Length: 349
Image (cartoon, rainbow, N blue to C red; front, top):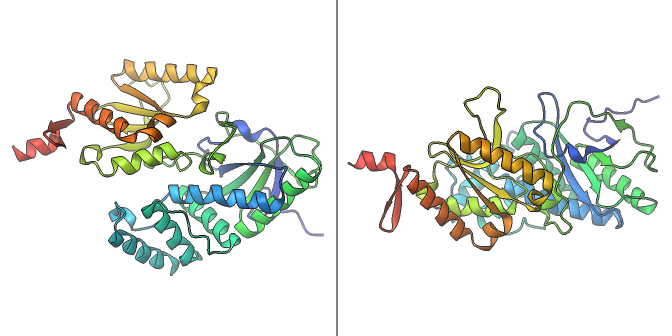
């Protein structure tokens, strides 16, 4: 008799109950990264897999260049940068099982803003994206399929087929977030004991990236936040913004306060920027935001909040206000037609 693989082993499928409040949390020392994907279980398994593919490609592109060794010098979308990225991809693939044509397609999409090429087989795209994500986080990865509506009958069957397909071709563990007593009882139940987190955003019409819930990577815009991605592409072209730090922890002088992760930080200027999705309008999260803001402000930080729509509708206006604040805080000196850091100004003097 063969033993059933562990629920976190690559290729395994399991059920998990009530995982939605755990998605998006920073994993503890021995925990895998949970990558949650909201799916429509009323469709076919093929359609669900294709939806998963679209979501995963958005995340893989958003994580560039964290997964590409030697990419520190790539900072734009010029042809030379794309050529350099492809060279680094080829170097990586000589010592790894990654598929070079797929990685080149993701690098090209990240640098040019075009979609990931669709000429590759679906299993190559999904396996490649999951490898990129695992490499970026340097942890084991578990995919969690969460139906937008309770699944039953053919919906449960489609979820099961999807989970088994992704587990086999993506070479990861897959958990299905279903109620107790669901007809997918052939899969073992995962006991969750140590993970903690906030409820996920349940926007009714999410973009592919917004269908995914995953922790941010320190130093990078969140891979599932189109607004953070747009703002970063704009700021990357501004010399005055060079000291920015995405998704980093801020500690207050009081040892009683736990460090807080903020969306964007200029540490020397003590400027915090938060970019809020629709979930920040929920009463509990709105109240928690005010507590965080008050605590940061008490310790000298200025906190600027923008909605996703503000950033996506007029990123230049948001960036212009950030520049003005940095000038006012004394870390950037404004000259006619340009901005320089105060350190640069002192060197020139």
